[in-house]
Length: 153
Image: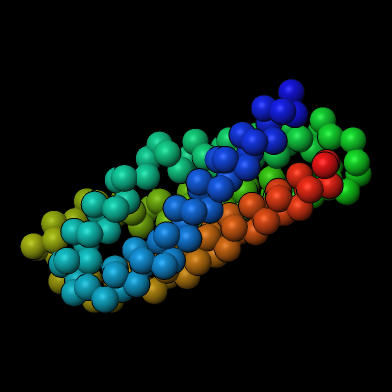
């Protein structure tokens, strides 16, 4: 069972962390630099590309870490898998509570006819901060998972 769970968790956690790091290294700097109409168009385009891929990866990480925390013997590895699972849960929570509502709102806007108060409601600053937080948690989960796997060897 561990022969399937360990590589599976590392795969889905690595994919989620990689996508989120990609947003930090390329996607987010691009979105910040765009004028409002182009930002809305690009953000709407990007945000539709990650469903259901990211939820599957994050749920897989959480479920796999929970299973590994229950199935592994060394107490340190068990604790680390639990911590990695908690970090994956944190990533999911920030995504669902902070980022997904903004993504939905942006997708509902017409980039050529933005609301008059868009400058006051422009979500980039807040969305970017929460995106950094979830990216950091996902990468931290991957690092913790790697250490935990090392303890199993």
